[in-house]
Image (tube, rainbow, N blue to C red; front, side, top):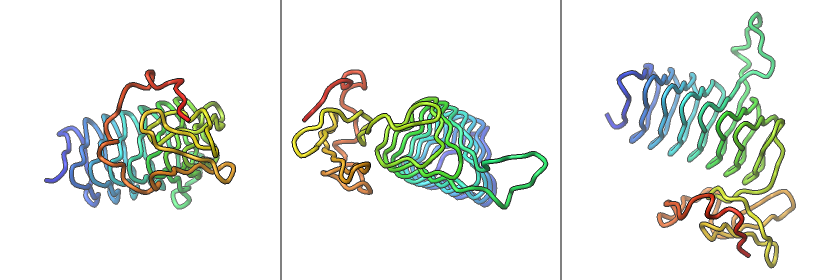
Length: 219
C-alpha cells in the first residue's frame, strides 16, 4: 500500500487515496472521495462522498469535509474548523441533491475553529484567521478576520502580513523575500513566482518564528 491508514481509521470501498498520504486515528474517508498525494488527515477527520482533495493538503483534528467541497493543492485546515454544504438546512427537508459547492483554492489556510459557509470560494493563499466566519468569496492572499469575516490586509505565501509599501507599490515578505504588488486595486499578485508554481525547495523550510518576523516591514 502506497499510503498509510491507522488501524482505527476507515476508508470505504470506492475512495481513491494518493501515494504518501497518511490517515490517522478514528478518521473516515467515504466512498467516491478522492485524496491526492502526500496529504495528512489528523485524528477524527471525516471526508464525505465525492469530495475532491489535491496534493499536499493538511487537515488537522476534528474536521469534517462534506460532499460538494473541492480542495486544491497545499490547503491547510486548522483544528475543528467547520465547512458546510447547505445554506438553509432543515431536518424535514431532503436537500441531498442540492449540496452547494465550496472551493478552497491552492495554498489557502483556514484557521482553528473558523467557519466557511458553503457556496463560497477561498482564494489562493488567502488566510482565514482563527474563529472567523466566512460568508462570501475571498480574494487571493486576503487576510480575513472577525464575525462576519472582513478583509484585514494581505498575507504573503509564507503566511506573514504584508506591510510597508515600497517604491512602485511593492510589498516584500519578511521571511521569503518574495515581492507582491496590488494591481489593479483589490487584486494582489506575486512578482517573483507564479501563483500556481511550486515553491522552490530552498523556500520550503521556515526561517524563524512568526513572532520573530512580526512587525518587520521590508521595502
